[in-house]
Length: 212
Image 1 (cartoon, rainbow, N blue to C red):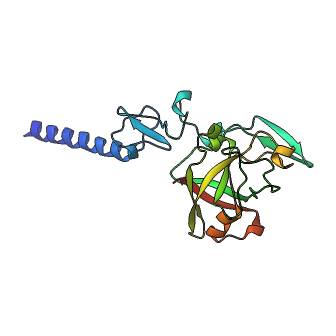
Image 2: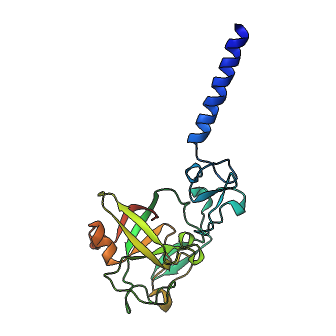
């Protein structure tokens, strides 16, 4: 009887551990069976969590999953009397990533300066379009893709990625004379702000976003 009780306890412990593992999100090269088993923007390939080729992530190639502390400034730039840090990276992506929404005029002669990088076109203020900070822009891998943006008032909308909010360069004609972007920016058109029911005079508003 004692042996039977011990065997039963072991079987219960094994099932309990597997249950916990199934509820946890695996990081790079962690075990997985479905897409939901992997954290962030990783995807389940061959039973292991790896970079998602559809969104061009390079998390696992570095050998570890990035944390907010890993995204450090690489320099600084002074523009119009204001000194700002420059970044090659952005905070890691989550299922709902915190960001700052800023307002941009993507039309010719607007705040953006040059045409949008993704399509070399200007965009009307009635279009729901955004630019993403350099790290999130990921070398253009998110060009023409849709993201979902959710404001703290509960309203949400979708928008198309058409440009980079450059976190490395600025202060020139190409960037409309503006300094480098912070590394956590979703730079939205007036249509995005209107859809979210936000006051454009605020200029900066906290929200969350994810790939649509």
